Image (tube, rainbow, N blue to C red; front, side, top):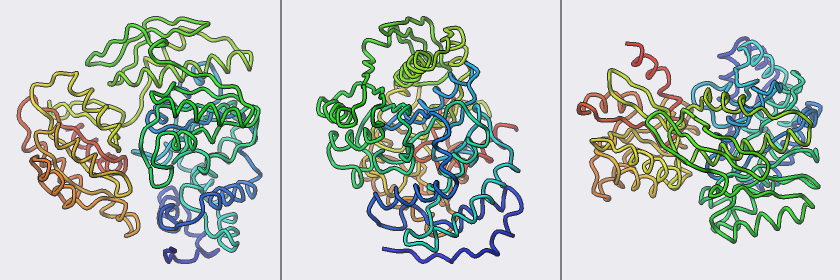
Length: 467
């Protein structure tokens, strides 16, 4: 299946004159990843070809490549924070972005300038045209963003790249790094993207473990399912790679959840770090933190730099991860913002909210991506909510992007079937405003279901919080 999109011409380059026009070019002229169906390996070959046109910048620095179902974004942010505080020049790739497109290619946990971003898009214009004219066809938005990031990082001569996968691992567009010193990190596994990755946890684990480098090393959170563990071990063996499992039951001690964040002790075979505080809600974040610390342990030994426990504590204390159980107050109303977008993440989120012992169930502003298991997600939301405000994202974007959002009428029907209370809202701003209007004193408002919706709401949330 091919979706008709206008042909990019050389004259389009003249239209890229500033940050907003660069973003417009990316959003409106590149093929959406899901608008075409093709063999996954072809997409990977196309990304390789794009990077080759750029001089293979991804080979210029050692990378930490992170895959998993849940926690890979948080693990990427934490790993970058720890590397940066150890004075390592660090580039970070995460997706999707929540508030600003430059979240996808951070330098030392900070945005590059708008001018630099614009120049990077301009630099990729000719390679995009060349691919458009080839048998591979025009690269997707995601592939181009990966190219932008690697080009940016090579320009800045970084010490490490922290690269979060998009979907899966084996055939993901980020799996284009051939260096043996690439470190693979695998976070918690679960069921997501089953139509692409497979319908069993072992198949999903095999796909995630596809990022393990030949003759390299991998660090993985010990899976709950034995078949997933076997799949990861098998992939490491095929690659002649060493493998280290992190067992959270042994590595996380004295874990406490407070309204301000989590506190725990970290234990490995070689080190103990007590009283680590992370100002982020969710006990599961301790697992991601353990993977980040284990990564630093390995790199410090391999690359001969000293691990500073005080810097690790300080790094975690200042950690900020957008839309991961992010809490704020707006007009004296507690608001939790979280990017949970699949049943596993939503169960974890509501488990966290239950542990906070709120006096009233929250009002929930909710949207869902149509390619996810939105039915199961919606049922979970319905069960834990006083009322759901069902909405959509990308209501002002091109049609192919709007189709990514589940119809709010379908969400509402699922909630009604589950016995919940729901109001249909045409856009997320009206949904949030209505949630504030109908909320009771001391009732929390939760915004969740899709990073895309959070991005749509960002400016409105800032406006509300500044009143």
